[in-house]
Amino acid sequence: MKIPLPIIIGIIAGLINSIAWYAFANKLGFYTVEVYIYRNYMTLALLILGVIVSIYLKKRKNGGLLEFKDALKTGLLYSIILAVILALFNYIYYTVITPDTIDYFLSEAKKSLIAHKIASQDIPKYLEAERANFSSFKLVPPILFFGLISSLLAGLAMQKKNSNTISAN
Image 1: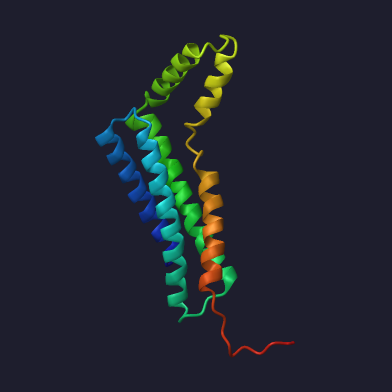
Image 2: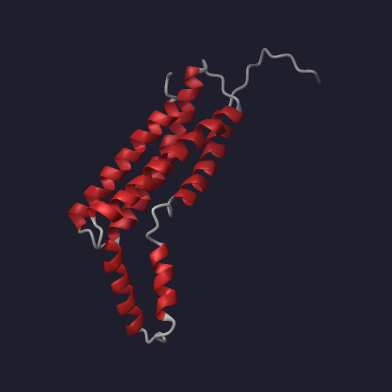
């Protein structure tokens, strides 16, 4: 059974993103916010580029013909694979590579809350909201949303139907 091209491209992009995230963290420090900013930019760039490349290759494989629904399916399949790979890497990153990262950032957040004179009974509520930022699946909804938008736009731009088809109208 042949693996569809969007899946292969999604796996490659997920690995590139994961390796880049680790490299940024290793170079800049595992406990800097800049690492997450660079990761987000890299994720968005790979998402958009991957959707466009996947749809383009699908169109090329079909001899230049591509229906909008096929373009949309191709882009979404790529986006889903990328989201799953990144969710898995997030889990590995926070449990194996740097298991104390979440505690470090929560400690820093608590210091900031105390410095801003937040009521002590409200601090746990803020910290719980901050902990949610480190969920392994936090990137999945934005990746799927921007993947959908990218797929819609790329599908509209690249669709080309066979002009030899007979219409019932």
